Figure 1 (cartoon, rainbow, N blue to C red):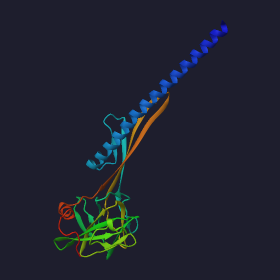
Figure 2 (figure 1 turned 30 degrees about the vertical axis):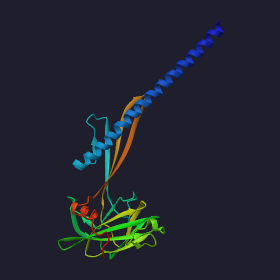
Figure 3 (figure 1 turned 45 degrees about the vertical axis):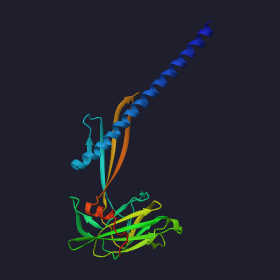
Figure 4 (figure 1 turned 120 degrees about the vertical axis):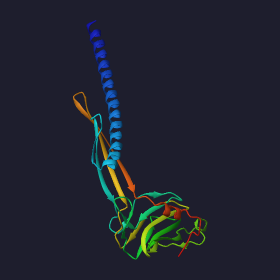
Length: 251
């Protein structure tokens, strides 16, 4: 009888410890999920707080979560301007060739080289390029088209045959903006040249933190990082030029 009692007691103790461990684990999971939500909310609020105040530190009203914000200019690397983004079919990528002022208006410091290359990484579709420029107080746009596919069913009539995955655009007057629109296939694009490309916007990184809740004498803390790219906007008069239904190409 004593042996049976000991065996039953051991089984009950093992079962109790197992249930206790499971309950503790589930409690940790619930706490971690709640902390992750708070960290994410803090990271989001940190970005809004930075945009409104310019401050790089945010503390939530409940003092249980916070965020640290960093901001850096979006620039090219050397003579390459590559956002690393995939552009879908008929989407558009924008590359500024002029600086911007603090209030968001365009400045008067222009890309200084005579040409710029618009390139696609392994791109096999067709590419429409719009080059916006300024002459005195007037704005103009030149339109170009290139076919990079050997398949005639994926070529636009009137476009120039592209070679080497790149198209060279001559810089005339005061350069403002280049837009690239892929046709038939999406792709990743970049600019290369011999001049320095202007700043394209700002990258805002916000790391939210939430924690300090004691669980079994250990401290639990959650971190969540958000990155937002705020590229300079396209003025309405340029946007209307992009979607114009007039001639697609110009010299």
